[in-house]
Image 1 (cartoon, one colour):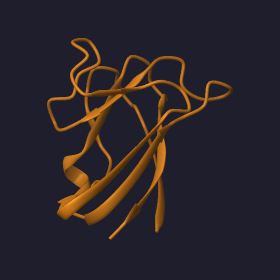
Image 2: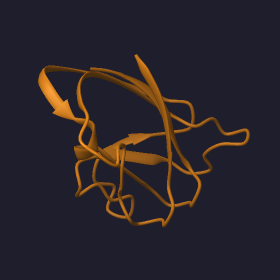
Image 3: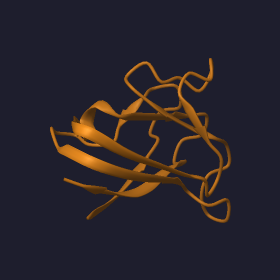
Image 4: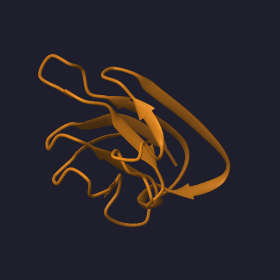
Length: 95
C-alpha cells in the first residue's frame, strides 16, 4: 500500500488525487481531522466534483471512504473539492 496526502489549493477547483496516471484496485480516503485539519467538508468524485453544488461524496473531518474496484481505476481520475484552501485528505491505495 502507498500513502498519499492531497490538499486543496483553490476552493472551487477540483484537485486530482494523482498528478500522473496510476492504476489502482483499492483506495482508502480520510478527510483530515478537525484539529489542524479540515474546517469544512471535502467532496470526492470525478472531474465534475463541486463543493458549491454538493456534487460528489461528502466527507466530514476524520470520515473515511473505502473503495474496491473490480478493474483497475486511474487514481488521477478521482478528484476532491472543498470550500477552504489547505483542507484535504490523506489515504492509502493499492495497485
